[in-house]
Amino acid sequence: MKRLIYELTESFRIAFAQIRANKMRSALTALGVIIGIVAVTLMGTAIRGIDKGFQNSLSMLGDDILYVQKWPWGNVEDWWNYIGRPPIKPEMAGPLNTVIAQTPNSLLEVAVPVAGRGTTAKYGENKVSNVITFGTTAEYSRILNAEFKEGRFFNDTEDASGRPVCILGYDIAEALFQDRSALGEQMFLNGHPYLVIGVMAKQGSFLGLFSFDNQAVVPLESFRKSFGTRRGAELRVKIKDKTRLVEAKEELVGAMRRVRAQLPGERDNFSVNEQGAIKETLDPIKQGIAMAGLFITGLSLFVGAIGIMNITFVSVKERTKEIGTRKALGARRRTILLQFLIEAVSICLIGGLVGLSLTYGLVFVVGQAFPSFPVEFSISLVFVSMAVSVVVGILSGFAPAWGAARLDPVVALRYE
Image 1: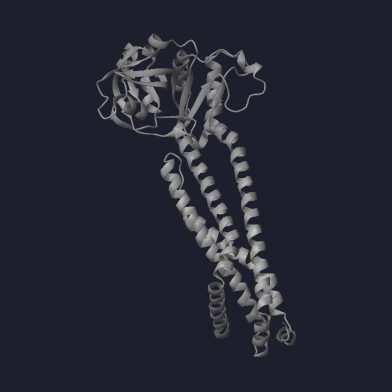
Image 2 (image 1 turned 180 degrees about the horizontal axis):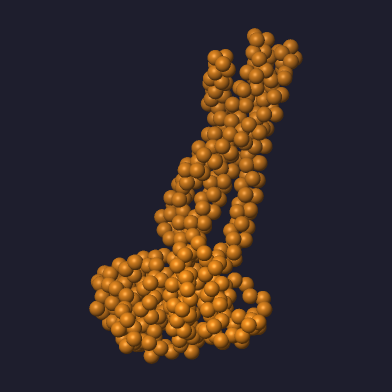
């Protein structure tokens, strides 16, 4: 055991002496590994960021909410079977809630109608276009995931009377009112006056496609007066136990068929959507990105391994006489093997550390430039990168190290 420890210590000393003696060659040899490790860690960070952003976005939609809509989420090939469906009307929320209340041990809690359209918000000289304006009922506060920066949600009285009050998303309030409080101020949605009674805290965006902070919520009756509901609406249904989502979805389908007065055997004329449909649509895209990244990463590491193997062969040739002298003095094959193997692994580890440093800097720059994109440098990637570096060093250095260990000392001493 003591001999093995001595051989390892001596091999590391010789390896680093050779790296110092051939700095430029070692740096160029490590370049392939550096590129490979940067590719590994950047791809891992990107995939982790996509996963985190995806989960954050889905949590904003609500993992305990089902959406009753005219169209299903995802690709629709037989669209002609959906185009003729009757629209989902806000008035259907009342009968649906009645069915829910009459169902023993129902998994559904409440159904809330939501009608929406794009509008323009204005206050004084400040204006924001493409504001997503929702008309809904006071029950919406039971399914709302966002917290309030200031103010409150509208109550049943304001809802029933159709009072022109509104709750603004964070970005809308910032753009219109800037440094002042929006509470109690009158602003305009497509020219219709509304009193601001609440501002939601910042939520972020859904996969960068649309922002949850670019919305305004108003009472449904007020929405009808200002914009109408001819375009239809959707029903958002909160479930009691999200672990029983499939059962809740089946119950909701049955309840909606009763509300729609559909006969047995008739095809559903509505769709019940949930966030799992988005996940199924986006998973192949995410897997494609991961596969492409793995291919690029593997190619980079393969090129780096070939470079290290080549330089290690050159190093063996240059030091053939030294190998012969050491073997003539009693060095074992294991000692020679460890010497060159550790040299290859050391170059890979140095390349791995440099690659990690570069990746950390790049991740920091991306995080500063795009704060909305959830990137973070994971500690697990450090261990993965170091393990990859060691494996590449062993695989690329074993063949030349094995060749050096098997040299005949007599032939090696006569080598010119």
